Image (cartoon, rainbow, N blue to C red; front, side, top):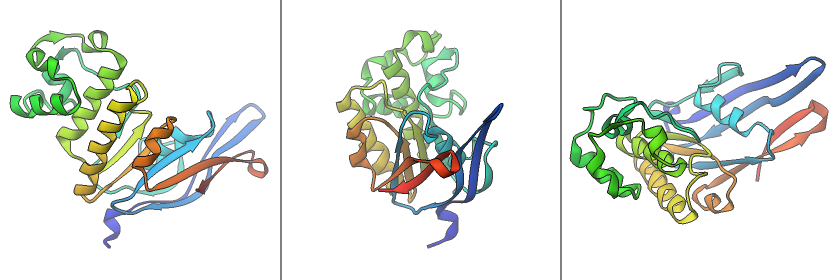
Length: 217
């Protein structure tokens, strides 16, 4: 297996310091995820789940150490950004609004269970105000399905969805990354999401380090 297909981190740490309080949220981690694997990151609130996910995704520069991030990855946040403009532009972001033709956008709207929005593709609006939280999350997932990255980092990306829709979309995401030879890493609180992951990392308190450690369960 080529090393450029593996997600890995070496000696990654992240320490918060506020006055006299020093907390090692991530401490000297060595982790690896191979193509085809999916990892669920769980732990108590404030344990550093999102910090770890962002460090692995390469969007948390405050962390120290080395991360080997495969090409063609995308981060899927809990609250996605929707630009002001047409729904076509919101679905295509960060690509230009003409990156995908109408049939492709109509198909992905069906996949994320919002076919009723087809007729609004070229309507200009502030879609972050027009769409509910769950609909905004489905727009973000639609972007992922359009761009077809090899690796996905999902941070509570389906928290506003009902469980049936969440399961439907997780299955679609998992099938896509596996077909692309990549992987999926998720932070999610709902137990139903666990079935879509082959591995489980648990952030547990480490009193000696005044922080948390990652254990595979």
